[in-house]
Length: 144
Image 1 (tube, rainbow, N blue to C red):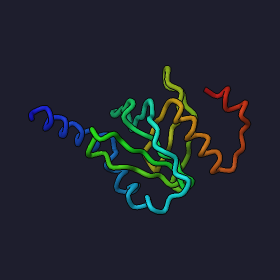
Image 2: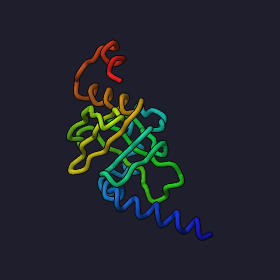
Image 3: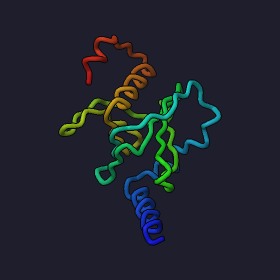
């Protein structure tokens, strides 16, 4: 019982310190779920970081849709509400290397979210498609 309470406390504290709860106030997934089209099944993200404090490895999933992208945590993080970021609300998505990690940085307002792995590549391609950029398959294979 003690471990369960401790985990709930840590989960709550992590959601506060990382800024996840702040993002959930503006980007709640539940509010837009029924209006999304071409939604792809959630896929695990190798590494997700909000601020420098929080790092989530293989416990967050990326949801891509025509209207934007979402983030969903596994059930062990009950205080991390599902998020959805519409493309028009995203300031930028840029490729970035941090030490050994190749990924993308998503700028949403004042917050930055760093994502690595295959899903980072998929997110970057979806962003470019939304922005009207066309990339060749050859360029994409050489990117990562």
